[in-house]
Image (cartoon, one colour):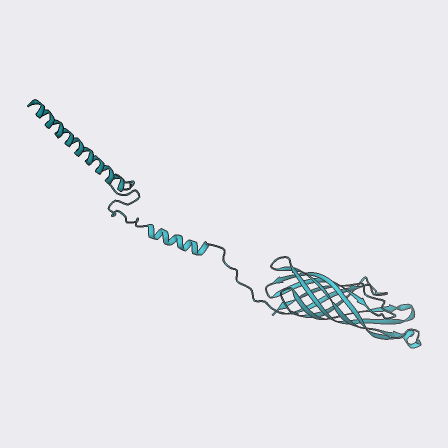
Length: 250
């Protein structure tokens, strides 16, 4: 009898142990299925205002996102610079100082001129120019004066090398026709000892300088060396012509 009671009690205890173990396993499985989330003392997810349903974003999150999007639109990346329209035509006035003429009364002879250019590209341009200068030799001992003039019609190619958005170096080369004349008046002219002469002389133009642009306006400075392929008796040659130019592009 005692043996029967002991067996019965043992079976009941084993059954209770197995039930408790199964319940504990089930509880652990359910707990693992739920991911832990940080909560506030009010039982809400961390960062969520009190009274806001779980899973709802803060009231100001949309505003923040919108502001960020606007900022990225306005400041994200560099703004593209508006391209300035390319102006092909150029016209300007020239002031010049020519040196190297024989018996000139001063080291340099002043003159004037003009230029008209047409751009084939942003770097290459063709130019037509007209330069004029002259001077007078006064031979007081002989009561004679000699008036010397030079009008040069040139056609040059100009190549630009940009140094900045408004400054560029430019080199030039081409041909020029110098219409040179020496007009004699006074005693020696009347006696025939000095003769008036004129001649058209072809020349090779080489030179270069600097150009500055201010919107539609520009200024430039050039040194030009005309290599004369002929000469007058009175005028042996021209060393250099220093030119200052100002004008506009259109």
